[in-house]
Image (spheres, helix red, strand yellow):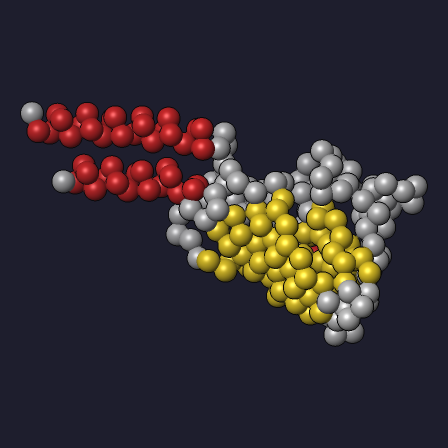
Length: 208
């Protein structure tokens, strides 16, 4: 019985990477800009789904990025630069070369409301590259996606000042230990199978 309990526990830990995660961001800024963002991810091998609701913006497009630090001690200014663990150039969300935090633009209508949702395959809520605890920042201007000759184009997209921000916090609590996806689901099953065989062999020896 103890072996079976141990088997169940180990398998839960090994397969924990498939447990969904969900994060939330409460955005606050100047001139009445506010809103919320939710980020959900069914497992570490699947894309995140991002839902955005913001009010109080000037009509038009605004740069929308994940920044490296969840530090709001000096407002949005203390969130650092774009989250860019690979140290590459700024780009568009669909570019092969981009910051992890490069989420392009959101568009506000004539009433200053931006409401949209989409998936992203680079951002993750799992492992060492998780964006949990970092910040989302909305900028005053349009992100040029690294496509212009402006000196800041390949650094920030020349998106201007920061009009709202918030820390990416846990919405759906999870108890499993955090770990990298590694080779993804393909790497999970061999590990689980190896552990299962070992524990079943131990159980057989106990019975004998």
